[in-house]
Image 1 (cartoon, rainbow, N blue to C red):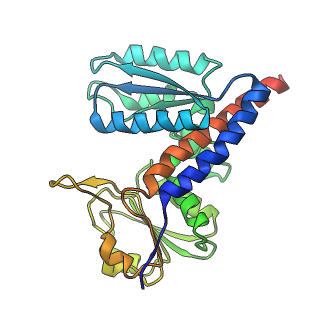
Image 2 (tube, helix red, strand yellow):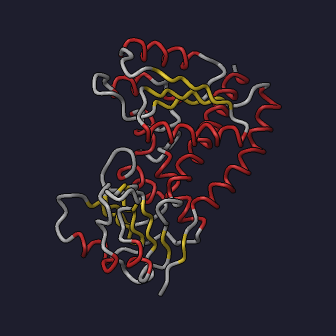
Length: 289
């Protein structure tokens, strides 16, 4: 068996194409395009690449990007004041604080300071709670991308045995909640899990989001299973691999995402979707007022 590759680049391109039309229609009604406020602190190369990708995607869809590049030694107070300004700015409908931040800054209160109505990343406790009770507003972008890829590939989720490897607040926990909402039976595994290979081997759907290169061995995968690899790990030779042993897993899985070119492009596409959804809600409330 050779797995069908789930092409995240192609799916993200389709989403951007659809978004461009929706963004144009929004701008006609509201008199302004949706706006995404992006805050980047310091010169972390990986963060800079991510932000550039997001800004290019904004340009392609017609979303306006408000980029704020701040020096490495920026103060906590300055960042708080900038977030307050973006919260109040009617041109901004979504706010992204690029992580990680320099060590002298405390990310948690800064994330809490972002208005839940502009929380395009879906990390604010208000939005986390909305997802937990089954009434999602903003959902973290990577989990949304994982579910979209499964749906677009036609992978049946209702009644499926799904295993999530990783329990982070950014991917593991929210993607588990999304899978539950789809009717899957969900197991969350992590570094303390006993018999990880056995759990993975019984799964119809595997979401790997643990951040360890090729930790999920190919021969663990149940024949025909769908594998979504969230991991992006750079090896000493400069190559990039996921959390799944791709070549071996491809011989057993029914569906699998590549790294790179799988989940990564979808994360950016879902950020843009969240920004538009935020704009639609904000402008609708204005019209009702």
